[in-house]
Length: 431
Image 1: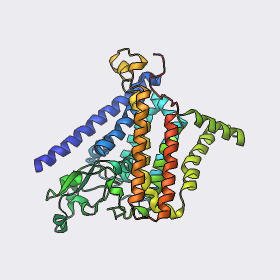
Image 2: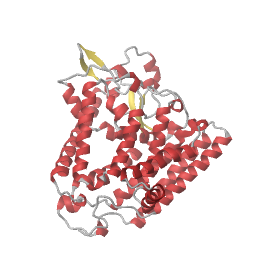
Image 3: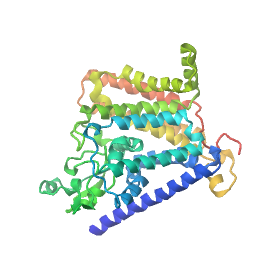
Image 4: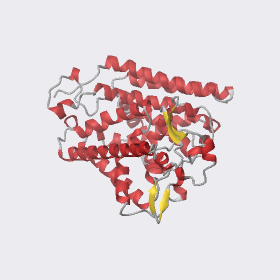
């Protein structure tokens, strides 16, 4: 069993190293490659392929991208020379900064047209590395992952719809444990011999994937080999509101609930912003208000989707129903990102292999992709409706939230039916 755990950790390290190499190459390509986005692998891989592959890995496997995070490889290497002494401030041990950063990334993507700028794309990767390393060399544990990382917050919520989770094999074994190495790890003379859970998830109390980076440190740390990766039904953890390790009751955590709202309505906004009606809406706002500043116009669009629309649909009495948004929100992201991934699936081939392809060979035709998108949206809608009607909710709440999910579903269907910008690819562009 020990050899299996060593293999697991070695595999994780290998994946982290490979993604680190890929990150360095993409940075170099972004800074010194062709400045025209469709002819640059940095914009191609980051904004077309990475995001699409990410959501499919989350849907079909689990949160293995967090496990393979290259920032952690760099952080762990540097912590050999500089061990952090401080704990993350108690007042900031929540998701408020994570919500702000996730929203900021979505806003920056639109405002600076990141998909069209290889240099800015490379700069984002560099900035990510610098902030992650600075935070985790200053503060102990996985402070950046748990409280700040926008990709991490996205993955944490998405992984509630994953088919794999880390849990105890036998809870009776945990009951007899007195060292709690899965949580605390093992230290000797100030040296970390084994890491415990750096996002403070105590395995016997762990319920689902929220805040789990799939790092497998708990698997390696458990002296009884009592931690495993188990296959579960996608979304199963959302069926009941039981206390979660390191979190408590999800429905009592306003920060987590707001993160879910931003995640779901941000999915709608991110897709809608790539369509003609989004441009028409911002022009209408400009005509009505007289505002011509692009920053303020985009901000107004974000306020409409992330503030006004949720306020219109969600009341204070409905907070406990907010987690039912997760299946629909996640599959809106899957539907959107699958469009870019599938239609631009082979768009990297002319760049990487210097082979000329016609537009029709760059990816899957839209008449095939669109029904797939609709199918994903339907899965999300059915998932959310299942949570509404199988939960211990009042009939009033069930009816209201059925209508809410239906409205979001129909709006998402309409958005996905619209012509969408083919950002950062050769598709629709003469080579």
